[in-house]
Amino acid sequence: MLDLQNKVVLITGLGQTSDEGWGIGAAIATLFARQGAIIYGGNRSLASATRTQARIQNEGGICDVQETDVTSAASVQGLVDSCMARHGRIDILVNNVGRSEPGCPATMSEETWDSQMDINLKSVYLTCHAVLSIMERQETGGAVVNIASIAGLRYIGKPQVAYSATKAAIMQFTKATAVVYAGKGVRLNTVVPGLIATPYTKALATRYAPGGDEQAYMEMRDAQVPTGRMGDAWDVAHTALFLAANESRYITGQEIVVDGGITSSTGRV
Ligand SMILES: NC(=O)c1ccc[n+]([C@@H]2O[C@H](COP(=O)([O-])OP(=O)(O)OC[C@H]3O[C@@H](n4cnc5c(N)ncnc54)[C@H](OP(=O)(O)O)[C@@H]3O)[C@@H](O)[C@H]2O)c1
Image (tube, rainbow, N blue to C red; front, side, top):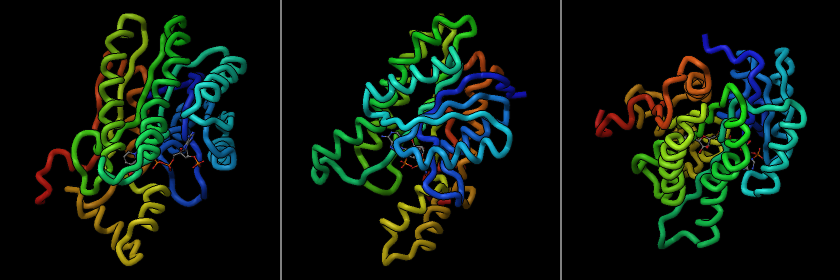
């Protein structure tokens, strides 16, 4: 089940700044490696990427990493070229990099708006631009899994309009591209995480917790979820695995929401 034996996986944002907890990209890369995949990861900081690489290699998995800025066409092309030079194919692409900056149109600077578009949305275009034609040429095609957010489906309690807009755009980018590639053996789908406890979430708590009370901030996030707790990176990773694996071969252009029931609720549970 959900076997990825010898599949070459290109993933962005697999790094982690500490060994504590699991970021979503790190968990996806590790889970896919456990399923037999060969991981090729691009990350802004090499130090973060090598931390995940070491975790995978310590379990006997295969993982190469390369310093990559997903907002740069040249850097993304360099990542794809290196992966192709090493393995000669790319079976699965996971677009995981993403970052939220607060603000509404009146308060957000143009610079922040542009950087949100670049890191969350242009990055997905750039990797797909470089990888889709490779997948199309392969006899076994390929699968793309993009990571969005429920902020792309609804307001989730804080103004972050650029982030919301980019995450909504990822879903439609995925749908439209999936139709174009449906007859070419390439599937594209989106995982839509809700509130997930990751090292980045902890950093958000440090930044935004009222009065610096990080525990209260995390409890407030737990309380927003009908199941009573945030998800973790593995909840997202297992969904990404399903969408990357052959078992989902008839699924394309779809989203799977992983949110403990938030988007099904009125918020009064
Ligand atoms: N955490 C949540 O609650 C949540 C909820 C919904 C959706 N998501 C989405 O899930 C994804 C992963 O979230 P996460 O919380 O696991 O984030 P994370 O821990 O911050 O991991 C993101 C990784 O991306 C890397 N990165 C940042 N900018 C980059 C760039 N320009 N080029 C290449 N790599 C870059 C970071 O590298 P450095 O180590 O150099 O910083 C980091 O390793 C994002 O798309 C996010 O929007 C998260």
